Image 1 (cartoon, rainbow, N blue to C red):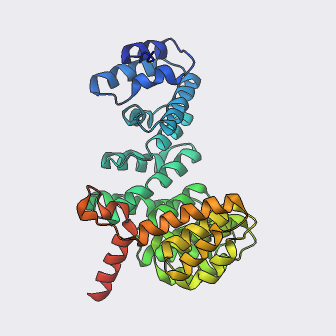
Image 2: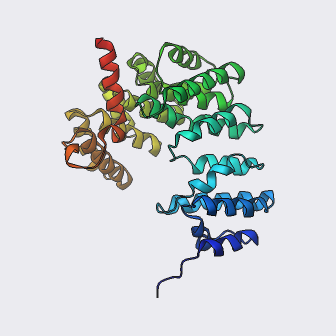
Length: 333
């Protein structure tokens, strides 16, 4: 017998009663329309802080488990919730939402929220809108808005703060001489967390001037730094780093190994494919699984896909190629 689906009104009743969050009735809040959202907000505000936080976290968890669940409409008003735990969960819950109207509230949270964790999360969330801006899918006004807001963060936040670090990583997608200066300054810092963020930013900038620094960090004693360097070198598509990446396939840290394999897949070329195929023959089952996935990535990036025969937008799926084409075009002007 098929399970009976909980209606919106039934879910609303559970929420008003302060019932323990349960996926069975939380599903009733999927894809809320405007009238339903108004009723949801009314019930939501009748709850005290802790139940709101637990319900928000449960919605987020359910959305991660079930791709058919869309709670964006519910999460948006939570960005202004009085409970910082709710605001933090809402930012995370909206991470896949590319609605341009999120730019202003995220900037507001990044600049004004009393909780550092919320400001940092908002700064990190702005990164996807920086990507949209670089692929001409964000209005020029909002692109400028993000740029100016993050530059202000650089002037007002301590360099050691997670807000500063996340802002640096986010704005790195908008590569220019000013951002490059901030990235270099961060890399020269004595703060290891900030230096790690600088490596992340170098990769996201896709600016080859940083390749030498990133290659050097592939041998860092810190697993975290090696991990971010392995990811960044792939974003830079630096084939000269192939020898260092090949060594990381046998790294003691499994995340580093995975990042090295994935970067080899993105960089491409016969040497990279040979390394991936060799890893598939390993006696280490976990490494074999990672290598097989990396080969799939290789085939996606470097295989022959006729996008004209599909409904898929190549520029959306392969943004790196878009940025590179733009950079090349600018260099030829």
